Image (cartoon, rainbow, N blue to C red):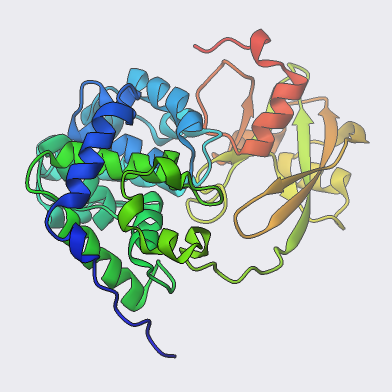
Length: 367
């Protein structure tokens, strides 16, 4: 496989012009009132950057605010039970991010005396922190000249310099890092980092870039070619496979739901879910086997689809009532009876959806 020829940064952008144009645009049109832009600390920048991976700003804002209220600093996060952390992450998806946040906070507490490290290498040694996230922490919170390369920035740079190829690996990724480094100014690093992210998020968007409003339009090779949406190179699409399962929505006489904690790794790792069985398994038999309690009543609910990044999961809920508390529930720490408001648990998204339908949130009170 041949590598993509290296493209030089346009000559008129090698003298600090990119930074000057971006900063002037940011001062007038950038976003300045996002919650993580207030009271900036390495901790707040770190949490926001992790939340913003694969997730839109509008979705993240309420989660970030609730997270900061519950875990205002790195020690509070490190000392919290993982179930509480996952509970406050429920609905954001990509739960490995939350597990890594918790592990990284504990590492900061235990190995750095609760003070965030301030070098690229030491930050990248934290679970879930890569070069771009570390660069965001250093530049935004510490004013250090450290470039970033998140999805928005990759899109801006591939269009500015007409860079082809897979932006996640190999020579293309190395080329983008070289360009990002060359364009980073010596001063106002925090504002520059926020400016280039804002440009990608608000103007240089994936499908409908607003080139007429872009401060870099005059030097953008992709715009000059007349095909800005050609960049970044599109990944080959593939058919998303489908999987099917039954979820046992088991309730006891107190109206509590039987939940099962999933293994630490894998889909919904560490979260609590309804017991899951394959489509061919008899639900009544499975109920007796899992809970140690026969089904007093059983009916099948309406199936629905939950989509992950790499497959569709078609879920058929089976609503079961049992007459007792189930001998296996008392013996297995991975099983628990749960009622909304009784305790903070990280719930898989379809589980929360089903529970909310049966027990609307307005009737449940957080402790």
